[in-house]
Image (tube, rainbow, N blue to C red; front, side):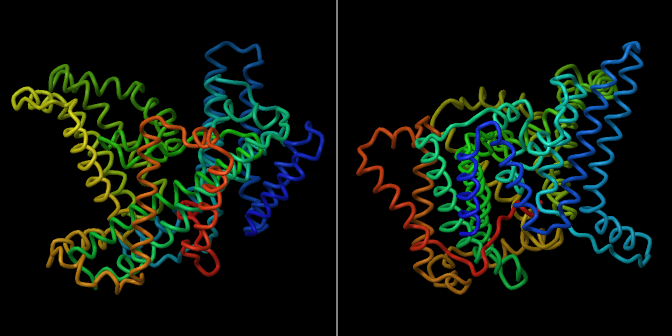
Length: 503
């Protein structure tokens, strides 16, 4: 309720001030929002803002000098590296220092004390967004923003500050600074999307999270189908929490006339792990592709490595191996981005290795289709690929949610111990923190989510379709959605928070 009142106050001021001052209203409310998490944490947000602004302007200044092209390139690269080291160094210091110290102590039998460092909310998101901007300026995609306050809004825009999506300056800057008049339809659409996000979060995610917390927090007490049920619940929790959070974020931004990038596109309908990462946390995937995968793939050393592999393994396989290696490197970075723990590194390696293996085995698969006369365009094969990908994704959740890497493997082994489907019917699941009615609500909520996802997958724009309905039908849908939150929502005392805000 505090957040909804905050958005209401921000929107009220936003639309009553002269239009040329609207971006200033967004900046002020964004800093108030972040300061609410702790005034001291503003230092880190300001550090990223000022260092990125300064280095980008410096690169622009070098472009204006009379130096030869080679000298400019060397200077700009040095400035870029300085900016990247400052910001990624700060991120590494806050996020990975204790992980490094713990592993150093274990490896060399030392006893260095851990650091008592605060991890600012959303630091990975606004750092990656800022560094993407800096690299784009270095590549000459656009000029650096001259106004430091306008750039500060790009870094701190409050709806996306804590969990993304990771935006691009060239897509957002003109939206932030152009004038927006009040549009009732746009505000109505924004509120619709917010309520749909809260439905996913409160009705599905927080309720499913009860079982996830119980089983993964006490993993040694459970085995078999109980663990499988918990992993499936985590699929519901994580998607409902993160995708629901994104819908809230995009809905709030829409109220202010800002269109942010979509971050999810029915990921559980993916037909491969590659497809999954084109649909899940889309802006992180595109960031990794543009700023890590392509630079690595096109680098001089990777080109030399490709020539070596072509000589040793033939032209076709030799061409795929460097791409596979680049994918593994990228997903190791994705794992590190998620957190300072070996389980996250394994999570990244698992996804990267599956994508690399799929690329390497592509010729074998094509030959198998021919030999066994498999129609890869058939509906049955499509459904099989969806189910196969969903299974592989759920295996990755063992690494993502378990308390440690060792616990991940222990739970995998326990999954096959005393496995029986009777667990689903003998009442065992009712001892995990949820009552029978909660499972009914979960089933109903998942059915609604599935129907909406199928419609979206088939190109149906639900909000536009709803706009064409009679007024009475529209308002019945609104009331049903709004009332579902207090009636069916699993309201946690003090609020449940969002999972990805911790990253």
